[in-house]
Amino acid sequence: MKRNFRFYIALWGAKIGTKLLKLLKRNASFFPGKFALSICPDFMGMIEKPKTIIAVTGTNGKTTVCNMIEDVLADNGYDFIDNKIGSNVNSGIATALISGANFKGKAKKNMAVLEIDERSAPKVYPYVTPTYLVCTNLFRDSMLRNAHAEFIANILTNNIPKETKLILNGDDLISSGIAPENERQYFGISRLDTDLEECNNIVRDIVVCPKCNGKLEYDYVRYNHIGRAHCVNCDFGSPKIDFEITKIDFENKKMVMQTQEGEEEYNLITDGIINIYNMVATISALKQLGLTAQQINNSLKKQKIVETRYSEEVVNGIRIVNHLAKGMNPIACSRVFDYIRKDKGNKAVILLLDDLHDEMSSSENITWHYDTDFEFLNDDSIKQIIAPGPRHLDTFVRLQMAEILPDKIVHIKDKMDGAEKLDLSSIDTVYILYDVYTIKLCNMVKERVIKMIKEKEEEKHEN
Image 1: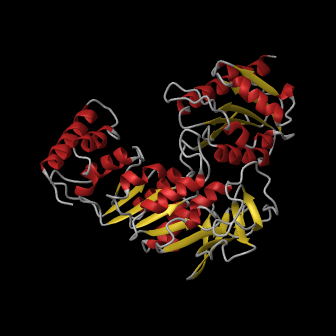
Image 2: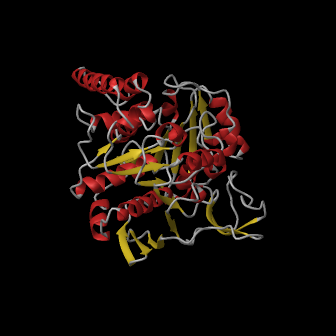
Image 3: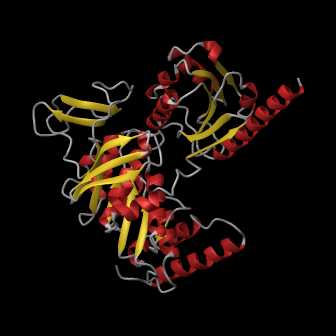
């Protein structure tokens, strides 16, 4: 795309704006790109891009996969640009390209790793052609954003460039079918002992064959619509997997991947199935670049899930776990609830998932409560559930509909006061669940919980 005067005004203004924002100790992750696009709408088509672009999209896991890819690349000496601290919509991607270009608009690095929001596809892919695009999964999401998975799949199919090679979740019948004309490879996990014959989730986003509307028959279900299935009437079904985990040894923290080159062993850095999928997606993408299994594994085993997604510490023998659950996202919340009930010991859970936030436009629509498997919290090992926030009555009703005993539930309007109601007797772990808008609140609640644990210990010694 031929450059014009507006392009250079946009580029230079954004560059100068970035320097000023950094002098003011502000995070220049969004404004430079927004400014450039307002001056020159075709800006991303005119600026030179790195030769190799690895992009990641999908409902859940795209940030984690990007972080893993970037950490492995950095550990192996690759130099690249990314939008790690910025937005994954068009303005944030423009900011990343600006930071990776000189004042002439020439790319300073040969590689980019970009997280791209699914809904931003029409604004990004006409100008940015990923060399490789990873799609982690496609599920229904917040009613404010991506409520219908097939709608999002169509957006991706209609906008992904034909030249882009796709790396898709072969266990997801929706995302594995996007952009059918593109070259592709699939990653997945073979049948596990914990897999089911029938789905035990409220939500399953694909229930009939998209080709003939025939009955879908599942060979096994892992969760929601993740698993392996086939149509009883036509040839539609789960694809052949190119990068397949054939064995997971949770006790020894190992997994075995079958590839065209043979078996490869990797260290597990997580025991949660969603993050194991994220690992498999990461490995599949990195192998496209020619990295060996040894290079990837040596770097991956140094990693842990970023603390903005998961963190834990032990205070006087009690684990405190901060776990991102992405409020208004029924699948993400359900997976975390399932993980908690299967964790060892007795637990208390604080739900900071109220969807009324000062930082965002809120919705009066609470249907996501009824797409979420709160029933997973109805477990003998979960001794207390605390639901603070303006929606506390709605959450209380939903928890009772899950047949959780009312004496296990504390609901209170003030978000901070919920921690004060925590009963620490006979509790091994306190889970604090939060979404992307309540990270600061989560840390404040965590500090209050730590203080309560220490005070309890001091009282024990005094007595």
